[in-house]
Length: 538
Image (cartoon, rainbow, N blue to C red; front, side, top):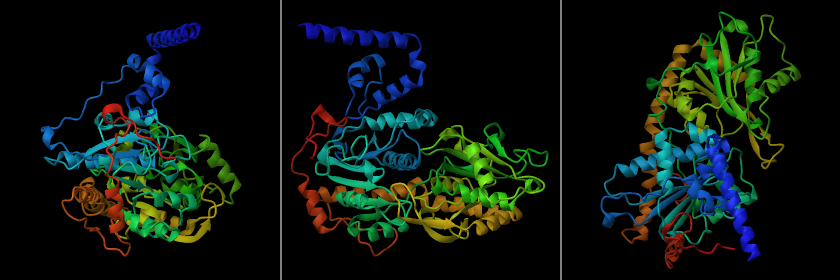
């Protein structure tokens, strides 16, 4: 009795404290906003607070998706699990797929599947969430409430393999209850080096299929030891309607940037000079050292150029100004007699809705990366008709041509010396060639603009959401074909958009394994029907 009374007092006190905190503007703090976001988009492992205090936080009441005719409601579900609330490469890529699929489904009178999403693979970022357009946030909440039954669900685990079941760090497992409860499990991932490590190979081989974005990844995954029958190329979409230069005015870049090196002069003031833009996380892989060396050796104050770096920390501090100054002091570079060409850093958060304005303010985009999974900022810049200079290796080889860009040659391969990919190889872009290309661009502005226009055409023709949605649902990674095969409507035909030697994922043996998964009808506990739970695999 005493124990129950004590628990009641503690519980009541907690409720009272939270009520008072909310009354005194606690709801305006970032902590509360994150807490409310997690409550609104809670995973199927609710915390004590999420379970017991959700009635105080009052998240929106769940609404089931509306279908015109319940009889025609698609029984199957595609559950997409990714870092939707985190920002970064995987997050942006996952959103590009989901937005494309949502539009594809809404254009069909009777879509063959419904779509659900879950946060997975990374921490939530309030800045990123608040920077999303309102229609995207509304869609996130809508898709999070989609009801899915396990044996009728295709799960897409869109993250690095360390987050897959069982995860190597704290995150919602994907698939949520292991690999054998769901109809089909797909891993979507990529790497920036020349190989995979042994743990990631094992995790890829547990999947029914593995999606990778480029032919480069098809080759490296298969050569590393991933089952060739599981590896499938599915390119990444780029929202060419959102990233459309005709819709925007340039951002006042001077108001966002801090001058780190060089000096402002009347002839080289923000907005009047030829602006090179680079967007990246502050890590060695991105080649910021190569970029600074090439730019500072090639240009001086009198060239009328400026370099703008939009960057953010990657397991490091935010003192980018000091890092750049220290890099220059430790190098063999000599300051030109007339002064350094200016270098600006933008280290404040740029909301997603403002990114097109930033690209619009630049004259060219440059990223001498040592390795990219896809190169999201590169394709965003190309969709905005910017001429781009980037390393001709790894992911960008899927879309770079001499007609639409300035591919940067690789000088040699170098070994990764630290981190989880120590011992792998990646590219060392040529500083000399980068200097020449940057000089060429400012000396041939009309040619550069023509390449930018061609870049946008190529993004529209090959990577627009409509085209990639057709690949995902039809010819490239046939979700609809898989559903038809499960329903016994017709055999699965693998019809890749580009012929290659690696066979498709649906072999006879794999089809038999998928049929075996249809035995018991169990309900996934992750926001799914009836609240029943399934056991987690050991």
